[in-house]
Image 1 (cartoon, one colour):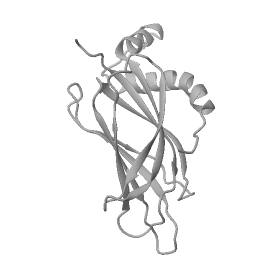
Image 2 (image 1 turned 120 degrees about the vertical axis):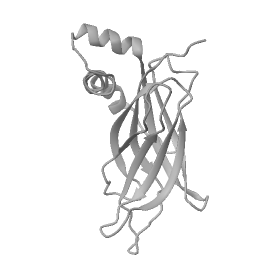
Image 3 (image 1 turned 60 degrees about the vertical axis):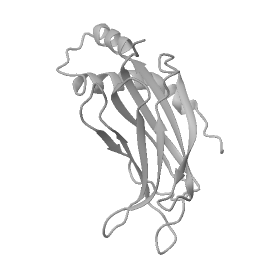
Image 4 (image 1 turned 45 degrees about the horizontal axis):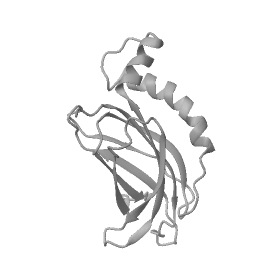
Length: 180
């Protein structure tokens, strides 16, 4: 059976119980998201959130779109502590497997995922929301709004992410991150 391809928006909502990393006992966290090359998109896709102020329980509410999703891919989430001098320190990582059984549902999937430190110890949690949009919906939106596109990675994604996530934002804003 052929799997559909489409756009996955990962919303990094917030973190919980991230460890203190700095000498003064604070953390200035950000999350880097990486999707390795897929069968459709032949290069890794990366993005990172802004640095959050509240280190232990940060709030980002940032959406990151990934194209060429077919299900089964793994989005690597790396939480870093921004340092004013030198390289950012790795707080921990989490692997987010894109579910294959719910890709055509167009529903929002929310979950807490555990972050593991480089030493293999618990390093807090991240609350994320997944929103998958099948290519058929993207194509319909493209026709509906009569937009021309040069390629699936550029103009179409920017246009569709803005239009579709406007709709999803109302649902995401209503989502409550309940402590695990």
